[in-house]
Length: 636
Image (cartoon, rainbow, N blue to C red; front, side, top):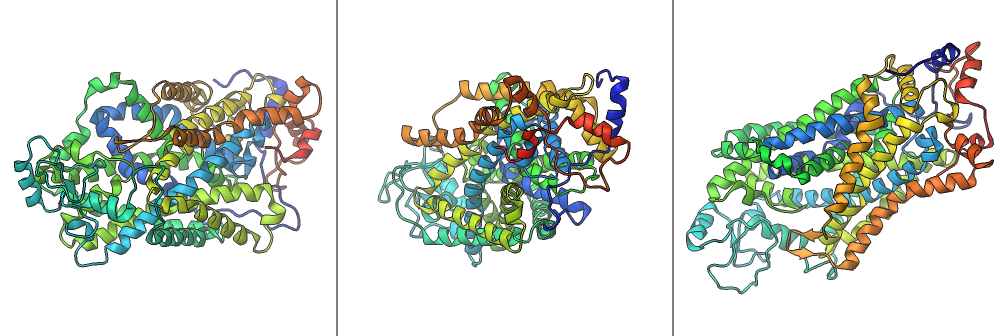
């Protein structure tokens, strides 16, 4: 239950239903934008959060961790942490009408959460766009009568290359215990002649030797690759034109970028389940291995997958929610999105493993051997899959266009979240004239320059370093833990009425927007379940930590590992730094400072939504007295 309410607080509680957090606008500034259509917000959420993590990572982890048994811890973490935190973020953004940085003025002591999220999404924007660059490379290469990764004998192939199913079966008979489709990185001398050496699929050689032209390690950056540089530049240009006009243009773009991948996915589904051997792959994907539930690694993979696929802790969900109208039913949106996101993950698994079952049958290997690889797996198995289909160049064009869109809407929504936070910090500058467009152009160009590191021959090693540390499960778990603690316990303690804690106060905020309070389970999650889950997985990930490797064959040097930890700490330390900074810069005694920092800094109310007349005194009691701290309004 919500806790006892006193008679003296009832009037304040009633008045609190009418509170509105409006953007900090000035008379000479244009009003903050909102989504035009009702579906714009949901499609933006789908576009941002539904991506390659759903299309490949979820089914891969599912079969790796016991098949259908993996769904048990997945849904436990989804209901106990994923959906409650997702709802928290979009509701917070909608209530405050501010991006992921300034929205945490709701509880100024925890304003470092906004900075941490901003650092994480900035790192994510730098490297995730490279997926679009690789997709563009394959997309342009698909405009040919014969796909270049379907054959051997090209300049990038070694004499260990095998392409056709007949060659693979022949190689199986001539090798004793070799793995025929070795999808781990294999170093083979170009002039090797040993017939019993491990064979390499043509699609893998195209990825390693043609696209990446990969070097021997992180300390061997090699030369720049102009083709990848041009693809990366084109990707950033596309991102820029998707968001430079604000959410009005973004809302129109997501109607295509978020929905078209589902068209391709359903086409691939129909084709995949009709292939011979599809049942082998589906059985491997869904057959539960209950004994795996005793392995703590399975639970850690399930938890991190939930946070990764739902894009929690990045601040971008708060930014997207901030463009909602105040009375938008964000509770309904959260439920719809949860069904779409998790449903897409399960559907993608059916598509992928139907193809993998066909490949395993034709090549005479297990599904596990076909599926083993690192971050470039989507560019190894899928290219091979489309070569098994009639009119393979057409299928390749459609598939890599889908990959491009999956990366595109995730990328430009992430950039939008970053820009929104900056715009809320400096509205007098970035909301005037064409300053926003210029600022976005500068952001995209700077991140393009940083992204050139991924276009070298050692670029994949740099990419995986970013992926493992800068926006990894560890950093997201850390941020999510403090988000839940902040809203669940500390929000509004400085102006608390009755026995209400932060979660109860935020429930009243939600009721003021949507007209009802969510089920009590959400509050329990914010206060207890989510903090325990996130911190438990976080501690376990530290206990089970291993040095990073690439494709299980290359171990990163200590200095490379140190760079990775610096990227992780760059965001994580923002929260304790925020605590210290805010306490030191707030006036008064220590107890007065804590009281002030636990008092919300609400933005200016709009007259048509705010309380007026007799309720003004009640709101003053709820919001607490104004202090010097309220006037600062520009904290971490």
